[in-house]
Length: 225
Image (cartoon, rainbow, N blue to C red; front, side, top):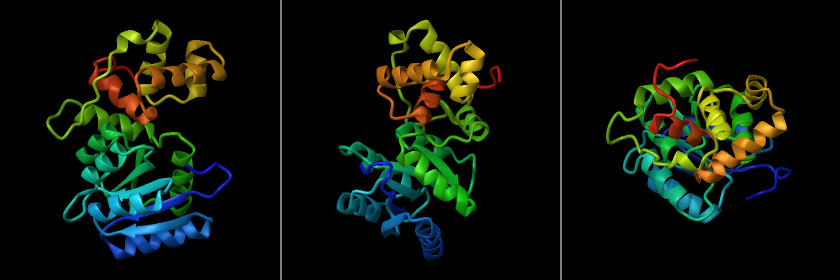
């Protein structure tokens, strides 16, 4: 992967030429290089293998191999890029399945240029892109809802009581600063706890941690805000 000082390298996968062109122009204007475009999932998998990007913008609904299956294949390979799923609906069940599979977040296709470029840089740096309210509604609606949910099974017994507290708050969409205030800890300490939670549960980022919190029943749908 590139260092943070180097602009992200991106693959844009969408079956609509207008969307691909618009995203490429927006990203280029902010110094972000689009190294390949793909019109379906299979092309996306091949483009990632060929160009080794930092981030993939992946449309969910594409002909042939869809974006969800393409994301699963890409994330199953060694040292995969970060994936941002593109959708026209903020409560798409397939977005939830993508988060379960390891995607780092999702964007609505009507995203502003500023949000698009910030999102690419955010996930390239290793963070998840979570709009807390939307993500919580998404997980609450689709957790354990059927075969389309690629559930993450993790043993929470390896977490300390404090780490469980952090995971609960993380699942509620709290930032590190908010968790620090809630737990009366420093932000640095909270950041360490978050890192340990991700490491112990073998999770890529906070997006998967939210899914795990619901899938394991640590946090229940409709629970406390």
